[in-house]
Image 1 (tube, rainbow, N blue to C red):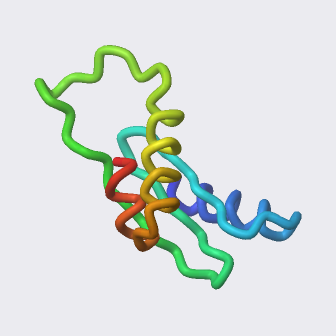
Image 2 (cartoon, one colour):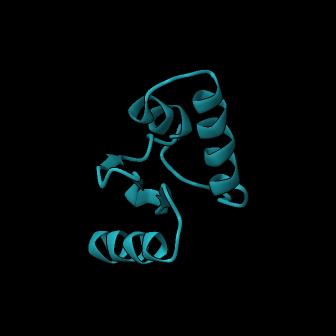
Length: 83
């Protein structure tokens, strides 16, 4: 699954995307930067240990990531904030 996510991100870059962020649910997330760097972030532990409803989880991740990015944080910090 991780290899497929990386391949998909590279395919999007080949079509013109600069930085590609891939969320993978319980498997965490990865960012393929324009410079070719791959940054991985594990998913955060779930309070209580069980996900009840994942609706909107990816949206929330991206909002948190974008907020950290606008605030000037590093790629890795943005990934951590999103998780």
